Image (cartoon, rainbow, N blue to C red; front, side, top):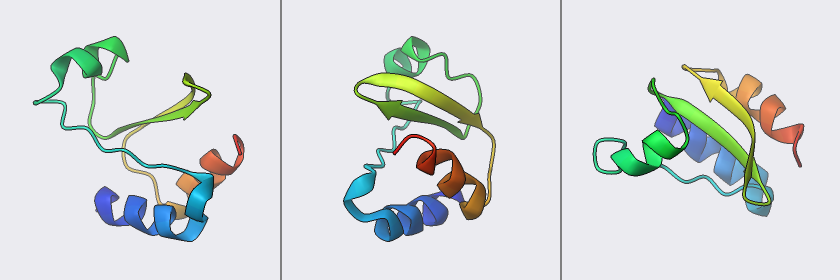
Length: 71
């Protein structure tokens, strides 16, 4: 499940990343602001700007690779 993968990544990558989960049903305005149409959608942000968007489940290795591009 994606939650477990994200928790592992947060633990593995330490203070290099901050992972925030948002319930789109509870936060529809935020989902609309970022154009979230499918779940899961992962927005990679750097300095307050979206630098990458990943839609759909990805294995841990693929997510780690995507995050490392922006560190």
